[in-house]
Image (cartoon, rainbow, N blue to C red; front, side, top):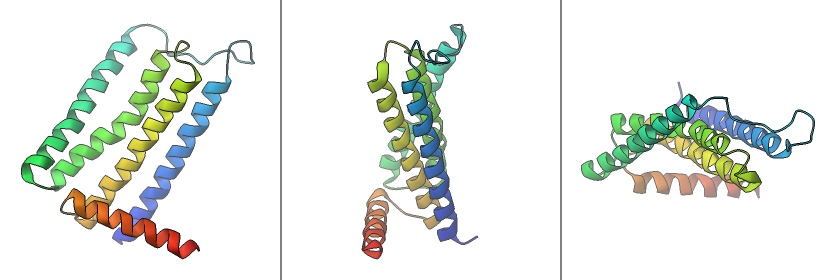
Length: 158
């Protein structure tokens, strides 16, 4: 498979995923008490909150560990990038779950923040896939590649 086609396909999938998250967040924010269907609430019972809390700690720790490994080895490695990808893809649903755990107290600003934070991790996941496909050696190179791609994209539109 052509690496560029893979990265383009993955970025399209991330955009679709981000769109679904945004649409879901808007629906959640608009379904206030008194409207048809009532409020959107988290699953019943407390057991899911404990599992959500454990998942938040585990995947945040994996993300931190992957950054520590990157700093220690002075750049990226395939296994370190895979560890990062697993952690980053787990965080968006965890963030939405943390929002749901605080409903209805958290309010609309909470859903906007949770979705924005989840969307950021979707974008970060794209950069990890890009680094894996392109065999990017370190963050500086990744940053330069992304900057060049962004400038090229905007220049081609004008």
